[in-house]
Amino acid sequence: MSRTKRITLGITAGALALGAGLGVTGMASAATTPSPSATSSTSTDSSASTDGFRGRKGGDRGQIAADLATKLGVDEAKVTEAIQAFREANKPTTAPTEGTKPDRTAQDVAMAKSLAKALGVDESKVTAALTEIRAAAQTERAAALKTKLDTAVKDGTLTQAEADAVTKAVEKGVIGGGGH
Image 1: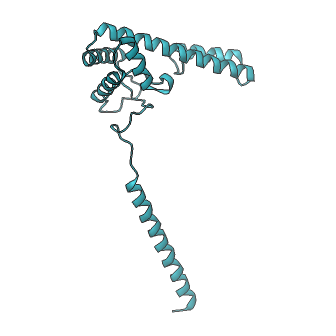
Image 2: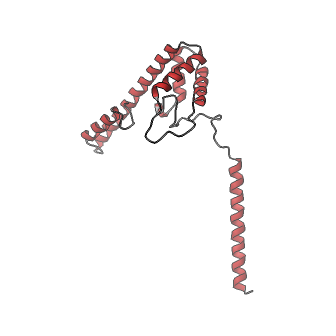
Image 3: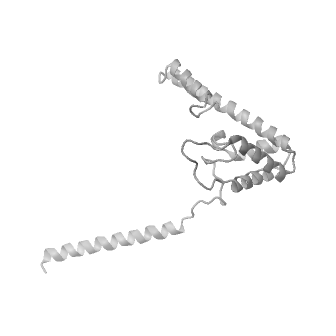
């Protein structure tokens, strides 16, 4: 075997060994890296939310639990646990069909009933508290959108007519973002 072939074979074998070693190391470190699970943390960015609060302060369900606990006069930990139990029990088993939305009214009724039972509070009180929290969240989103659009108009990024069109589209539910 010629010297050039031996050198080439040696370099190739070394590269393969190095690649295999890095691959095994990568796999070993991936095996020890904990992966997130539904039980170890609560996701705040769930697009398949079943509690009707997607987007509230970035989806901050801890704040929702705190607000609900305050309005109902119950312990925040109990509310958090009840919300989590409701979400676990009502996780969608399949992805929604393209162009369809879950029945929001049915979800709201089911959530109010579940929370009322878990917290020992009248269902009408839970419904009223959830409605108030949603209204406040909607007002906050609309104000944040208006501020953002006003800034874009001031900076020349958008015209006032464009900002008005975005606001109208959000209010009519054509696009998400702050109003509906």
